[in-house]
Image (cartoon, rainbow, N blue to C red; front, side):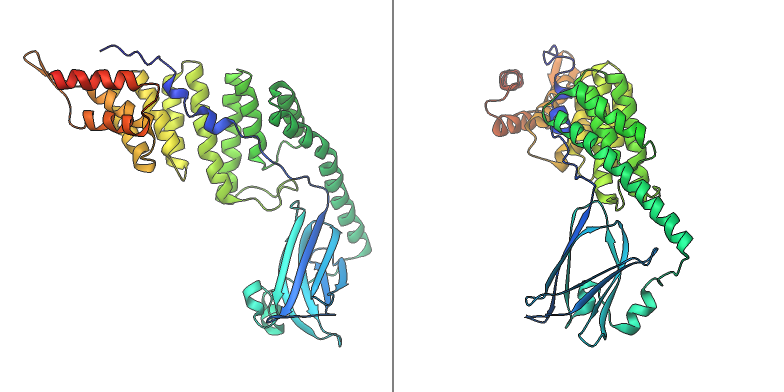
Length: 376
């Protein structure tokens, strides 16, 4: 039976799953903290709340209202020690570390009856764990203030370009998105924002600049691996990197890279990318499916069957994976003295495809194969 599926069609089915969603990036100008202090079920009113930046000793002071609530806007980025004091000035509890970053809204809730549940500790435990507030000279304060200002100015300067890139991606203006993202990465080449590299590669791929997209995915994977491993340097654009999200991103970028290789007929490289994606991704169903499709299209049927089985183990509802598996089994049927013996599982796989997608693209071919099997 000839392969009427088309050389590339199946391998690209999962591409849209990976590339169609534009990222939502937060702006990175100022931070706000909303909080509430309670004593059990009762609000803790008129308590003083003191935020002390552990490196500069800069402080923000405010008071809880009658509902025990407080909020603070325009905070500088940094790590703070937070103390809660009663009217006499007695420290009721201390939170040793509270990070304020480019996530604009932060929440801090404390129940004084169970302080440790919210990371707030009474005096002895807090002093043992908290970082000491470092006393620095006026010259050092000026130098640190200048450093923070330079960082904030840089971030503020990039904000409009980040918004431009996001808008262009959402509008599918790929060339405009590519230009904006290149500008961001040129301004901050050491950033740990792997998602910027992913977005750049996605835009390049949509513009059919596959060689460029492959290189951008490669860089994005490298950066994301450092974030996932916890070895990435500190980055003002990403003060609290998410290792779990980076791990997911690695699998997505490798899968997209594999699809780019397919587009330029580099199938061995595509197989390598999909294999790495399957090993890296928390849910490897898409990567294994793409690997199955590539192996099928280059006539490595046994490898295709193995990859499809792994994809189906992760997602048994993928009808196309059942079709590929069944068709690959049929194509490798054994012949003995002119008699063809279908491999076990062929009919089951194709019937499963028909069950899951009765109006699917390959229904006619699946039924034709099943008819041929029934006649033998």
